[in-house]
Length: 306
Ligand code: ARG
Image (tube, rainbow, N blue to C red):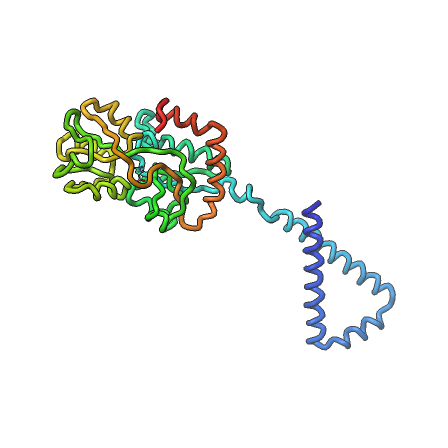
């Protein structure tokens, strides 16, 4: 019915337009002669003309209705459905995001991926995930190569100058990972030592403030673990939520949480001004209130919340 009314209104507008055009034509061609000729026509010819005009208008009306109904104004839902959105992540961060080698499929899985899948599914988007070095994630948003970033990324004042953030969905603390019995348990104990950090991370920023420490930025967390085990670096500054997993599989390592200075936690990042933030944020809130987020936390982090 709404479509019919819309089509009819469109028809009136169209008819008005046709009338205007023909009037203009008549004016410009000065067809008074044509009208005087019409007057001389006999009633039968007038009837035929009337019939032709009605048929013409009916045809226009039908065409208008069909096209208007087919190309009707899309709703928010139909715009979203099927649209592919790209999430950029740095898949070196178990259990937030990592490559699932066990399945042989090289799929990127994890806590962030489950949240992203939940939200994009609800919004009717198709999710594509790109694996980028952590340091390249904000540039990916700025150049619109990605629609959003989920990478256990902390919303810092510095980053907020370049991207927009959702609310925080999980928290973490900084911890020093080193070989057991190395005694590297505080920033002060690392003076003169090589400390590995992820390039572009908040841990890199924090480490730069430790006095006398030789900061070694590296691209990927697993590279850092290898460097540490090989003795090429003395310790790593990373998040406790990620360290826990590495400690399980590397019993020669230990972790010591240090006091958090400044920002912490994970949020979803978007290009500045992206309308997607307003779509995602309520669903993130729903994830929290419905208990679904707790379910994901238990699934990926075990019972111990950060
Ligand atoms: N939370 C830290 C930051 O925002 C580290 C995140 C590292 N994430 C990753 N996927 N490697 O700087």
